[in-house]
Image (cartoon, rainbow, N blue to C red; front, side, top):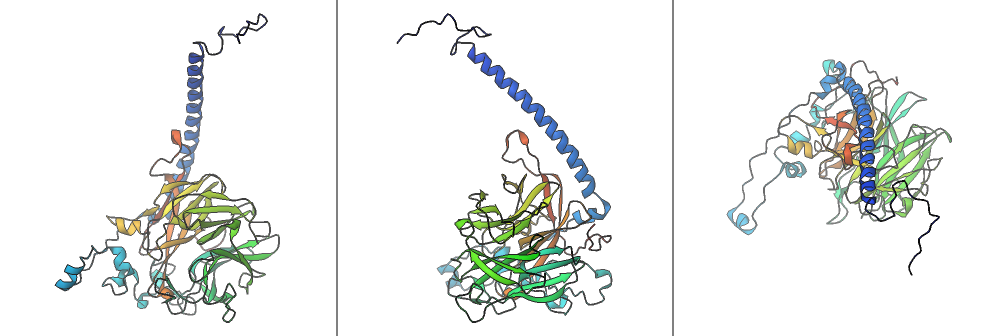
Length: 472
């Protein structure tokens, strides 16, 4: 049907009909205008970011923090290869042995490098002279009773009411065994251990604050099951200390979270229930309490192929219906979340069982926002690529802020010993936020620009002497 010309139609300012030639220059000029505005916004944003980084740079170059950024070399020498009979070599050629293989081999000739003798234990009860308050990553760490600390896969709660730090973790003081031929190394569940400290170095054993169930095989906490990565936060509304943890069966098919509460930080905690959050499988997990008292759960899901994040309810006893999938397809676990200067950061590990692997740092503008990967945060001197790419032969579990020193945190990690899990060690190292990231992110036009996260390797280090454990 032929359309009639409408004599009452208002002419356009460009005096051209839709679809005529002049629509192309209009689109081009519109695009040019958009790009100019975008470039101006980008310039302003980068100016603000550079100002922010300049401030952060001045903080990380503070004399008290400068020595923490002087990393040490860690060039571990491979032992000579073991002799094999000609017949064995012909039958099955042996692939080259790696440092990770040596780490996992309980008969390795260099095992003492990864797991120093108990004679070298850090003992806060002794007069350590110049060694007082120094951390020695990988050494046995004793409590005030002279026993090795048992708080693996744990986290720290600072209790403002008692002005005390509490360290909760898996109490693994039992024999290591395999439930079946293809099963992972494990110990029977004993419970959650708790230690208290005023200075993050001297730890008093407060006992097992959530004990295993020795008899009832149907109970989540039966000794034959799995209890991992306990974390505790305080709910000021209910005046309760709330513990969340990974609950599983021997074969890791239950894939749930458990919840327990207590009226005091040293328990005893009362176990409430377990569930699959958001109807999803949940394995390695953590919880994070924000400045506005909103708490979040972060857990590996979909067979560890992605992470799920969601807020807890106001009592911190359950999840809500809100959940976001992040780092989809990246296969990350062991999340450790912290916040600095309005930005949320997270350290994760790969999924390789007890074997160490490369850490990754991630950042987001909000907990429920888009999480971007920034790369490996580990820093070590020399050509120690293997040491760096294995996260110093450890796996992260928590990040503790050092109050009074802007941008300084303590990265808490476990150096797992699958041959004897009770002898797994702790690797605590300084983590500093500041400076630009190593590489651009997935965003176009180079924004946003997060601050770099760096975990510095030291065989021996301490917090700044002026820090005495008090909240500033």
